Image: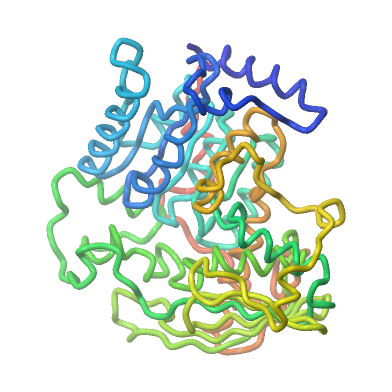
Length: 460
């Protein structure tokens, strides 16, 4: 099956999508009755914990998609992911009809494949935007993990390319397909708590371990099978230390932004959604943070307390007190404490308020998506539907970029130790050259956005 014939099929579906898009249960993979020519061919870039244990099972749910290639700089990880994929499709499709999944060490080789329709990017955060831009320029649709960007400048570049290429893009935020979160946002936007005045977003504190190397901070030889130079990518060239890489990279500013970007990508996004400010941002940011010693491998804030103000008068506090969110209005409050916990409100009647879906125009999963899937997250179903219909996903590039920009400018405010005036239209600080210089960072050659065009070697 060639990419051209598959894309012809997708375009024919899009041509019929003037009415709301409805497909049969079998077309969504409920009984496996999807022909190979109708499957969306996906390449998975990044085969770590989240890539293999969250993203692969998400794709496996849907028989109208198939992972045909994987990529990782770590031989052991990509081999493990490849084996898992081969086992799944070997059983689902039968050995006589399944040719196997390919594995690549270089993401450029995967993206340059003409048989792919889309890529799923599940790399460390500093490796999100470069493959995403390259894939879009190569004619692939893109699902990219969050936090979407390493810097504000990266987000600006990504949004520009997605707009120019017209590719379907999904920021992989499952929160926007969770039933209780959708109910929370529709109540806020419907006015169930009156005019919105203040939002508190609470995130975890500390620099958490996500692997067995968290305490291993000595310089070591690079393990066999790991392309460490490519893992570093745009980041500065430094000796290999296990704690820099798998499992704990998010606690170093060279690769991410700490808890504020990690969990903020989830819960700040809900604040933006509820405030109806998805395509803009606050106008002020200030706050304090507790940082590790300067010579520590981990240098992102372990504790933080940030205050933002929007042009509409709504204020936002982002604080490290454990996961949760609370919207406060003139007539009460609503929110939750804990990860995906039941909704609470100042008055139980708020939770039972009637909402007119026509007046609160937010994304809702199709009824054909099982409730179990909606409670876990349906970002892939929404993405696959977008690939077929060419309609925007519920978290396109700009929404993901605007969400994580709030975390980025919060980190900058903490590091500079002063209140910053932010222009969300220009996406720059007002009259502050030092702060504006922190909106981007130098990318180590050759892993730069400027080199992407030279990497493309498409056959037509």
